[in-house]
Length: 303
Ligand code: GLU
Image 1 (cartoon, protein in one colour):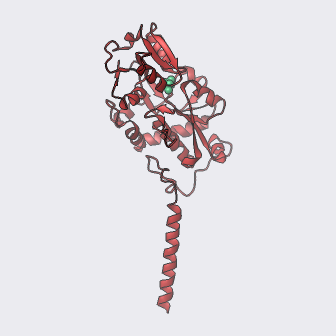
Image 2 (cartoon, helix red, strand yellow):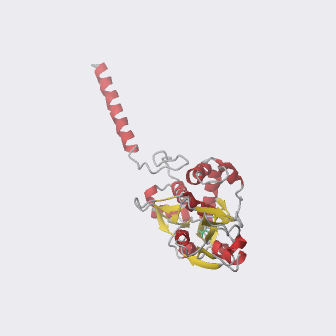
């Protein structure tokens, strides 16, 4: 009888454990980061923040809103079928959300184009902008930036059969497309002042303009252009890098606590291998890019 009671107790314990495992395993599989944290493996004690801190307010709201690109392969691209956005910048947003203790369904992505990134922050339409955004002195007077999380450089995209454009100087006298409100547009004006510049709202539209013959070249950061070239063999990059474009995460001016929080997370991910995993996942297939460790070594430590 005693034996039977012990068996019964053991069975009850086993069933209880099984129920617990099922409950824990119920989480959305998507909720995984390259760092390997999942909602299920997150520490039971969620991080706590002072109620009046930027992080505390976001956690209390239960939602992190992030402006990302929707039309740039590799950094922020919306899948027309699933409606999901994915890319390096999108993943950075998820890493920040998870570090705040939020789950994927508490992170909202809003489409940002180059020209509205700063107003989006100033008007509180988003908490963050992570959208291939170069840190520079002019922008720093309007918003705050995290430390650089990627270092790009401006380059040129042409059709493969183009033989006349090989450098930024060759853009003079040609029809060239770039994007309103970008550093790329400014750099074309400064470095090829005789170029006929067509300024559109996004780079995908520029690539379309080139394919239809309206322009001969598209100029912006090499890594954005490489994303388009990777999925279209009729295109090629020329001219090397003629600027440096360190990407930063944009935060509304004065939210210093949030910048510090994000900087600490970037530092951790640069040293624990997470950044390398993100780089390999989203940019690993891009031709001619350095290995993750070499790209990481080139990143400036401050903005
Ligand atoms: N990184 C440049 C910029 O922030 C060009 C890329 C873009 O427009 O998103 O303006």
